[in-house]
Every structure is written in C-alpha cells, then in structure tokens.
Length: 129
Image 1 (cartoon, one colour):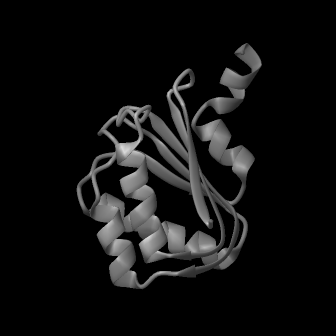
Image 2 (cartoon, one colour; image 1 turned 30 degrees about the vertical axis):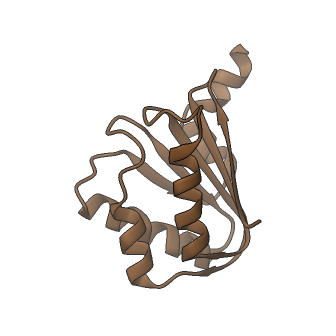
C-alpha cells in the first residue's frame, strides 16, 4: 500500500509513509483511517515520509480538497519530507493551499527526512529516549 501510518502515543506523533504512486483516493482513505484509529489524537504532530514517492497522481483540485481537511488540531505541526523535485513541488502546493484555507497549523516541506525530523524536534526526542 502506498500510504501507511503508525501512531506513537509516547512521542505524540503520527508517522505517515508514502511510496510508489500516490492517488487522491489513497490519501482520502489514509485520512479516514487515521481519524478512526483508536490511538489517534488530533493534538499529535505528524511526520510524512514521502521520500519513497515515485509519482503523485493527484489533481490540483484533489490537493486543494485534501488541504481543506481538518484532521489535526491548530497547534499540531506537520512536516513532509520528499526526495524528488516533483514530489517536493506537489507537497509545497499542498502546504500553500493549507495556509490559504486558514487552518493556522504549522506545516513545512523539506528535501530530506532528517530536516523534517529536526523541525519537529524529533532528533532531540530520540536522544532523550
């Protein structure tokens, strides 16, 4: 499956992993699965590891629709890590639509998983554990 997630209650973090070709229906199913997961808390932060994405098969309208969704709380931080220029551009479009929707949630897109982890302050948490 191109999209999966794990909920880390101790670190108050959702780690979503995307690989291969990602479609709108898979993103929508991912969001529903996350919202319905018994350990999910909307106040958690999210790390989206998109470094394995080969293709994003989502229309601009699909990105806009997903960006309007309110799954995480206003204080949650979301970081997206990509490894290709195309995936980075699509993720930035998502970030911009998210900002335009007035969600108020801090979100950033990065060219590396390590930079995304650092922004979420996960490197420090890993050393303390």
